[in-house]
Amino acid sequence: MSLQSDGMEDHVSNFDVIYNITKVNLMGRKLRVVGLADPDYAYQLTLKNCSDGSIDFNSGFALDLLLLLQYSLNFTYVALKGEGWSDLLPNGSWAGVGRQVLSNEAEFSIAQATLLPWNVKVFDFLFPTSKGFLVAAFRQPPSNSVRNILTASFPPVLWLVLFIFALIFIISIKVLHFGKTFYNERVCSVIKSVDINEEEEEEEEEGWMDALLALDASYWVLVTFCQRNSVGSPESIPMRIIYLALTILCIVAYVVFSAALVSNLSVELLPIRTFTDLIQSQLRIYGDVSIPFTHDYVKNIVNERLTGEGKSLLPSLDDTYFVNVQNGVRKVIDRKSTYISFEDALNTAYKIDFKMGDDYICNNLFKLTVPGVRMNGGMMFRKGSGLRQIFNPKVAMLYERGFIKRFTTIWYGSLFPRCLGDVVHAPPPLNLQDVSTAFMILLLGLLLCSVIFCGERAWLYFLLLYDWNHVWNNYSYPCRNCNVLRNKKHVRSSPDLFR
Image (spheres, rainbow, N blue to C red):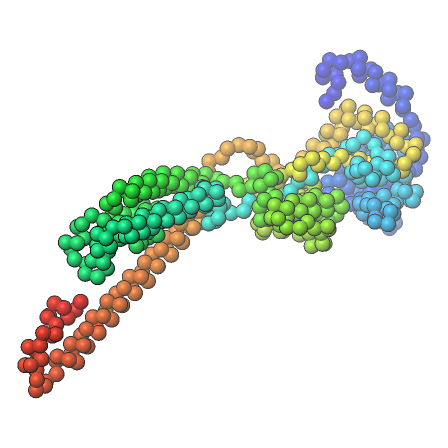
């Protein structure tokens, strides 16, 4: 933001005084400048080959910044190709552009190195000209699975409570039945009449339904939970209290679950909304292999999951947890993983490598910022280099004049998808996939009922065929004593032949 826009002209003159005091003309001095052309950060810098076999900087945010500094300080540069990102090796030596700067192969690096503690100890940095956020990219897992439908409508604790209630009702019915059969001979006689004779006059006596309910207590509780009443109502007051309490509980649970289920199916549901949800999800975590400090974040997430599962922590992670950006994005698209990297690298892969449009990125790919991670980057010099005091005031001037903001808009803005933000959209209409779980459950129930029906019919036909063969073999062939057999008392009457 320009200071003149706030009506602070004297502050502008003060800045001009500072710039004039620190104004240095390098008199065309030739500086060796190293730059890194990383395909994952193509907006930063690209290289081109010259006819004489050398290389030169082609385009990018870092090149525009370098050209402005070249114009204001009057120097020339020799472009050097970077060997990779600056990295501190386990043996204490440096690799990549860090080694090239420390070995005096180059005066400074225009690669936007991050201001990390181990970098600041060895190198001097200009004012940060880039800000990076470490994000976790993922796709939302399906919200219409059996697990999600059940847990989204009722939490697991509530399902456990309902199951315990069902057990309590079953146990209560069994206990009451045991008490009645043990202390009441009249009920015992009723049970015997039901089990043996099934006489209608005995069924009308008080207590026969309680005996039947107690014999099939589990079945009675099940049909009550399913809002059915194929058994009947009990006779005794304690059993009626249990029946009434269970019926009211089932009605309330049925209404609440139905309302929650309809709401979840008709409204777009995001299973992962916070970083805590991401940690507790089943998505496997991968990190960017080119960013060393992502190893610590991936390790912390994995160990936090293991702690929640009561397992021992891992001292270190193997290399399978870390892949390049392209493979990481492929794993994200498959809905099985989440990938941690810089937001710039992910957006570059989305648009350049995978040719994704803004609509697809905004509607299908999600990201969560890793808490407490914001990386500032800038140009890097050797520790104690006098060039830092010359370049830094010019970078401050570029900030004040709005050039850094302009370059950021041009180079970074083209990568970020243009989403509508947190606008509430109308939920998509329901389709067969949204109700596939309920549909499959209904089909399974229909198939099971059909199997039971066919089994019952087959058993009845078997009994009918058995009685028919019995009658045919014993009473339908000619014999000399047929008249005698017909007069026997043990011969079945015609209605009893097909019992």
